Image (cartoon, rainbow, N blue to C red; front, side, top):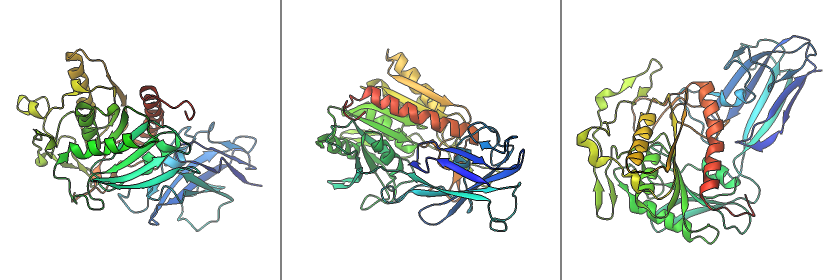
Length: 419
């Protein structure tokens, strides 16, 4: 009697599960397949081939996949190796409060390489992957110029506050903010273009908008004073680093695959205007898969002519954690982080740290979701090549997520009642 078990069947999206099968013929080759859909109904699938042991058992914490979408011992491999049926799609959970991501696991008693549906699985399980918890509160924010969504943990608090910034994707992205709120932070997922009545395109970075958002968050009665943290990625990490340099409200900053200077668009803050380093679109390359590689697109911050655009990281009041993927094909992010650290050292500062991950690309997300090494991006004529190889990217996301939580817990004064 084939039996497939997954423990727990309902869990947070950043929590691992334990997958086992029993009742298999001894040493039988089997296929495990995972299937999910995004909020729009687009399909994602993965499969891996395993051999049962002599007792007819399979345990993904112990047994290696011998082929399929990954090889080796990867207990969560079926989740992070999910591939879009439609090329260049990227799975981003939009409805984080009301519905989980549903994942179906199917067990076949052979190496199943045929079209899905031709053979019925021997056993199946349906799992729920949640981005929120009971009593978590989501408050739409439309105050002054600020647009976003505030996630509040249950209880009176006060909770350490975080601003969450994504990059060139634009709009309002909430899945990371909601997961951080489940972990005890008050998190404002902040939109800054292509959302509501904000500008449709990013043409300049007005740092006073981000200061207004920081003040709004700090003024909330459930947010711990006196400072907030910023978690940021890509273009958002460029803005996050600028916030660390110029805004007194920022007490700790995580920059994921960002830059150390202003690129593409000018940055304005009160009387200050920082013009961007010139870009070189002719340096774009198209990969064999048909995605655009822009790693060498940006001008060099080390060039003497570009010094006016380099951010004064030595002015940052709090600690900065730079998280970089060494296989980032979008930004030369490790080099930028190293330049920022050198600048801090030259000014006698030691408040910066780099976590560098071999094999990891640009899109470092919370763990266990479908990895994305290329996808469509706003304003480009071809998909963007983000980079990363599966095992390195998966390991980086798992490790960096715990480091991010540890960093903010260490550097923002925490409410002992919640964390």
